[in-house]
Amino acid sequence: GVTQIEPPWPLEGRWRLEQYERAARAVASEWMDNMDDPRDVQTSKRNGSSRSLLSAGSAVAMEIKRKKIRESALFLQTENTNIQEKLDFEMRMREGAYKLLLACSKREQVLNASKNLLTCNARIKAYLTQLQKKKWEQDMMGAVRRLSDPVSDDRVPCNGTVAMSDLRFPLMWRDSDHFNNRGSSRRVAVFCLIQIGSEVFDTQMVVVDRSVTDVCFEGVTIFKEAVPQFELKVELWSCALEEELTLVNTPKKLAKKLRNSFGKTAGKKLCPLLDPPDPDTFLQYNPIPFQAKYSLLAYTTLCLPEAEGSFQSHSLIVLQGAEWSSWLPLYGNLCCRLVAQPVCMTQSMMTGYLSQKQSVEGIYRCCSLYCVLSAGFLSCYFTPEEIDAKVQPTLNVPINKDTRIRVMEKESAGQKSRSLSIINPSPEGSQTIVFTTESSEELEDWLDALHQHLYDQSQWLHCCNQLMKIEVASPQKPSLFLTKQADSVYNDLS
Image (cartoon, rainbow, N blue to C red; front, side):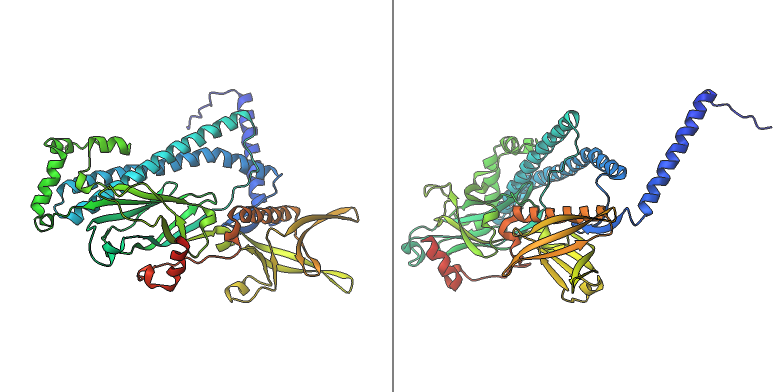
């Protein structure tokens, strides 16, 4: 026969275990029932993804909040891992760029390898800073969990896309240099580093001489996860090109000169290559030859107020003087088009049905409308299909800094009902639109979404007045001196 093995715990322990299992099954069943009940959960969209709307005070909602807090630390750890992977990748790229720098024989290859090495170092420095910041946030989160309830209602503004295009640096040559082809014959290789947070982009390298009136960098640089407090750093790096023409025609001499600038022990250092994470320490052990070394010529920092969507000039801090071999006669300004697109202007922040209360000859009736909150408006349609068909909304309610949102409570036959009142100024004084929802939980979610939308606008400021357009490709343009638009820019500079 089959021998039955008794569990090691006594009967009382088994009874308690069975009780626990039954309770667990009951909780799981209640959870599934709540998830399936359309009265308790409504599906909507915020920030472009589907989500479930739950009552803030329900046990299920509190459990979800606690789970989010527990997962937030895990999220930081995962994000740290992603940053570490990017850091490791850039370190491998830096090693390859340095080896390529030693192996190159052509001047353009050498300068590009040096540019790539500098770009890798800038990214590594940004990632190290980001890791340090995340570690501090993780420590602070742990301290908050120890001291108090970590559930916080502090609002966080939505992210946005920041794009820079038509980047150019006007030059101010002397007349004898530019028009008479006399004077300075210097030639300088330049490129730009453009950075927001841990994202660093570089431009192509261009060679500038006295025939060039302004340094132009074509293309669009896009940052997709910017915050309203972004700081966009633009750095202009320069490297003097030697006037010795024989170097161009004799690559072997150039290669020999570069190798000699490293010293006789360069090859020994290269294998194995000393590759510490810190960029400054790396360059101490693995120096760049003088003929290929870039120096920071000028820089500036642009923030949200400078994002106007049009071609504008901005002040530039110049670090080099005329005695530098890599110096250029900069005007003291850079010109560019800076665009900022908050997510709240490009995506639907929330969608769902609302019932509009209307008074017809003193009789109130409700009209069910499908509503979309986006770009400073609550757009109302009869059906969602009207959006795909490009039908104009039946009702467009402004949601901006002048909007007032109120919750009105009314008691009738012993039952309380709540409605959402949106008040906007009008020539007649004010216009009030009243909406109702099927449940108080749904009303709370719409109320939260509307307040979040107002908060996003308060942080992104003028960028929420009208959607700025981003040029996908920046076509080749003539010199600024040949365009009518540039005349006004240079008049502002002079």
